[in-house]
Length: 183
Length: 172
Image (cartoon, rainbow over the protein chains, first blue to last red):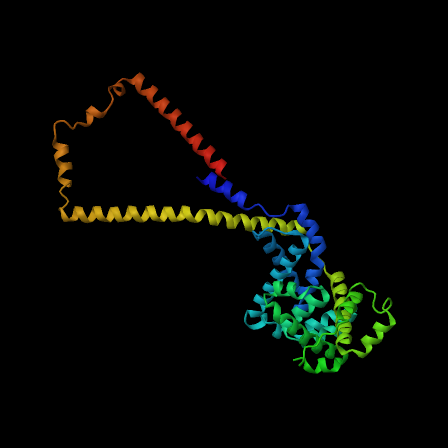
């Protein structure tokens, strides 16, 4: 009985992707995913953790993979949900509680010129707006794809994105406004 | 706030995504972007996000995919074992509860009858048909047969022990 159970467990534990296929997928998707998590959360260490957990959950998911593009979208969806879960947790886990120097620390490294302008502007935005903006303008996802990733209604994405874009464009043009809005 | 998207937005976005803005942009479109607030916002935001994406992608230090693959496999295997083990555990709990109910029923029924069966033992020991000597094989009385039986018993015990160790090792 136990042998049968162990055999079934072994078969059920087979991943939908073999090691080599996953390595290729990881190579192509890990950097953009980390960039998304790091910029939207403003925390590089958190981005590392969430990225690892996203891949493990992606591999553990029983759903069939309909090609690389769909797989990548699914991966972003997992990461988005993990980020939301993280923000829902109380106290220091909230994005609103993350100290500003976490955003500024990246800007200080000199590697991130655009971060110097975008960082404070992003920080002044709501977490949902940061996700929407990154998915639309950094990853180039369509409104339908963003709706699938974030779980928001497709019809509301256009309006939310329009408002968020107008707001961040203003903050980018007038960095002093963004600085003032920082908590 | 009115939601007015410019008709040129798609074209402008495509140019920025391809990295052709502003170098490969037609002059009339560039003039439009300068005068259109919506397209101006789009260019400013897309350029900032595209630049940030490139910089962050360069800064990313992704770990080994093999470690994640093995972690996922372990987690999935553990989940599968738990999923398969659940009905077995349920059956064991069910069997135990049935046994307990039967045992409780038996104890209650015997208590009601005043434990009459205990007197059966005392009658049995006094019965002339029950003799301990008769259960003892007569071969044991002979010393040469006794040794042979002892050796064969030890061999059987060793065989059974070996089998038990083998099955235990295979299970592990």
